[in-house]
Image 1 (cartoon, one colour):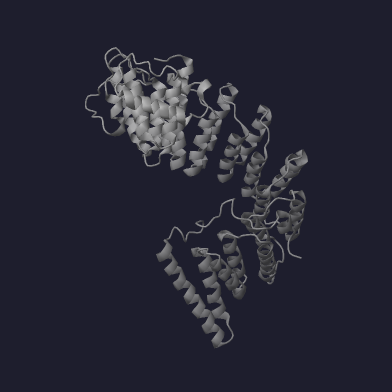
Image 2 (cartoon, rainbow, N blue to C red):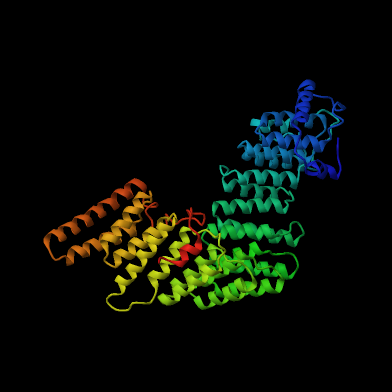
Length: 531
């Protein structure tokens, strides 16, 4: 039986893709000899690492039945090791049988623990073998050494289960608890896989629980926490709407870094800043800035944008502009569309004057690289700046604001930007609030033509504008027309809720991604504005 360090995971010297002719020869031999005696040596040129790699390749190619045949032969021929099970569990995961991988791994360990060590081929009382895992319970011939199962196989089984979303998260967490109770020593990869699944499911509470277990395990020297560990926890907090828990998690990161147990990188710090922006943790953001400089972590554009997002959500335009000028363009870093969006959001929330907004847009247009493509979120951020600008005080303020928004909306459409739901909603609501119902109706028609479902707030705002128009109309015909249109919109709202459901009609249901199509417009052209 092949052994030694080169067997681990297939070995460093056998990581190249398996040769399918070689695998075909292996499978032909396996089918010819069937149940080999322990001293079968007809495959001397294929050490255990190559056979393990063949199991992995068969699983990745969806040939799980052939992988099972090979694993069966390896077990009975005494050619298997723990990594054989790791490859087999990976194959089971790809075949949608990750639950069986969890059960099989735990059953094997429990059976072996009653015999002085986990071993394949030991019968498990009360656990009848079913499905493709039955091969694991066939006892090897006399004299064939049993295969010890431990953390490597456990991490493979857990990874398979956590990537298969049909396996409930509870099953994966139950496996962790049962494996620990049985005395199995789990490695960091096993816990990290569980954290990754918590992030996928948005279960922040369970992610924090797994992190606590890992911290306890580290105290006794079993596992080490790394950047992947904390990144998965932060993703779970984000997906689980528990961004407020970022401060204690970051405090743990600082302690680990000070003790030289963790080497945080720029993407990890960027995620901390993102969560800080969601909950308005400006003090935490300032701590991150100081720590990054102290730890020598390079400031990538991603991290700059995350910090600008903090300032943007706070409406702190002076701080955002100062950082942008000193640490972004001042340090020779080219901004991108996200940078422009965060600065525009800061301007909108700061209710900057129209003159300040136009100066900001001119500065951004000159700083952005020429090939930067405009996006719908950028168009929406610009329109938000214009909508909230503190200009035109007095009775004509709404008219002036409506004129400016309509000009920029038409400019974005002419420039070829593919606008998404929030932008249409913003323009319709702004025009309706300015009592420009005819213009709002035209934009509403554009939105319908683009196949975008209007939200409840959008329809309600437009309907209310028509109702107000009916109230102030000077003649009966105009009053009747406005009232009829308002009633049509109210009826449309009810029909859309029945058709699409309340979730689709929610205010944030059509929030577009950063990757919204940008059409053929450059960001410079969009920011320069209409002539």
